[in-house]
Image (cartoon, rainbow, N blue to C red):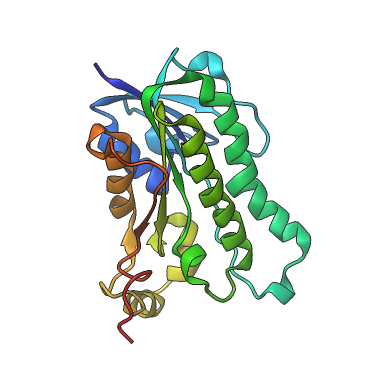
Length: 230
């Protein structure tokens, strides 16, 4: 039996790579603002803007076996250049919109289902200019562990904490070869991540192979969070 998987924001970047890995083996429901990159794929698209809309549950099946929330932001500035509205905006897209959507889909989550969220390596490490995004992603980590405890054993909840990944969201940080070289050198594995690196972990967390894992924050970060090679 094919499992039903809902992805919020699965039309580009990491979300799109997850779609490409699962499209032939699962029933995929993609809730996103745009659908150009998934046109023609065997998926169901649900028009959805996380900052404005309530998810149309009528387009979803009775049961969901997996849920992935992909939207996020990279807002890297000195704290003295950021007002409270900037922090609120990052919390809204990264955390509050996630909470809103989780509450909407929880009644549809099946027995032994899985939820996958995204954080950042900067929560564990403490990096300059990351105050806003680290605060928002740190909220996700705490929320996810509490949610995992509340819904075990019926629903597993895990978080992926990547380092820099070469996606449209990070394009400003990787806009030329020199920037890519500098960023690659910061990682013990000497490269930045790819969307495929993160998508493979997400697929693992959705499937039975990770069936004894819940409440975890998993660093997929080229070794940055655990290795000091300086």
